Image 1 (cartoon, helix red, strand yellow):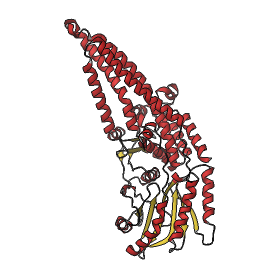
Image 2 (spheres, helix red, strand yellow):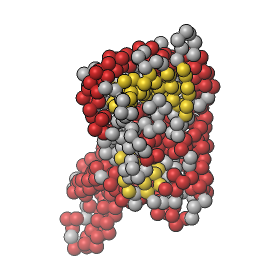
Image 3 (cartoon, helix red, strand yellow):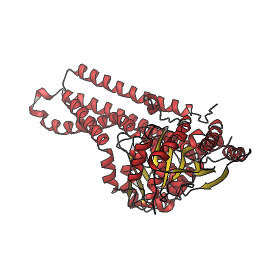
Image 4 (cartoon, helix red, strand yellow):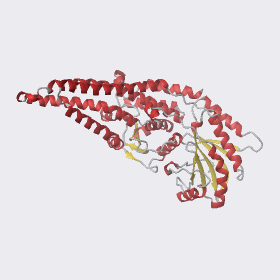
Length: 313
Length: 190
């Protein structure tokens, strides 16, 4: 009787699952490698690893717990009430009712760069933020499409997923740094201190392994991020039933993005993972798609036209 | 959403709950007895049109369906500033049953065509001798109702809404989360 037009993209889900599995595999391999290194050299670089895990965990937890406040502070956004931005709140209200989601807080960032992001560790603490540049450039239908995309990020708990995924990279990155510095400072003292002699090769090996793990996990996290973007595009388009409006918003935002001065872009790059479209110069996008947090415009438009075709059938 | 849905980043569109609408006639009697508000005989279904021919065809079918028969309702289709479509049915004010049946027919057609997730809300209008307006809004995805009382401009009479909540609370499932009582400014039929 009740029909559903929802068709899951199993290919995308399989690729996403595989990416996460590989990340987990790298993590396990990393831990095993560290244990073996320490056992083989019979020395304690344990303190360094302990501190890297502790600090890495702390950083990940902190960025997760205060993600909404950090992102709002970094973008200079202000939370707005329904009286201040009735249209924006109206669109969010309706999307929440369609998706059966609790309403997130809504914020506006005073920036000419057309963009939007969603953050917060769960849907109760979620904040949706759009820039004034976005509201100026897009019409209501396109704005709704962008907001539906961001609400899908909230529904998919992408902030949590990406933070957990990044934890490995953070720890590996910290280990590289710690190992490097203790090499530097420990190296100076070695002449008069024979007890410390064994630590040099250990730290070198730890440095090497960590660097490799960091590089691999970095690429995997970027890949995962691109898949999560595609999933959010898909869910957002199905929520409004208007994939073409989202496609049109994407085209507009990407076009305006590459036309904006470089200084603005460099400031915004730290926030890229949160954004609707990445703040990069046009030529760097074509140069290095595997380093990108977002799929290419063509890939996103292609998926949306497939959904459009599916809805019209 | 389950753990696996989160992990794989998938959201299934939420299907509407349709049956709760049939408790509206009872609630209408209660509202009249307790608060002196009478039905205007107008009800509307609000949905987000999907792009493409399939949805367009179903929408045309629904209109045709409702305008058939002896005591067919007056149908009016309007589009609001958010891009949502309002299908308004007008009956005589004492025929709440017929109104609800019509509204249900709209819902069913959309749901059968696979567009159930596009349904946003249904609104039934009431008014009192002093000219105050009250709408009872049904949220399809939650299966709950809430009162909405617009006054002049974009203001709402919260006191009246809370009074209505008390009156109809035993007849209808009321939406407990007040942040979901969103205003439907300019809704046709109010």
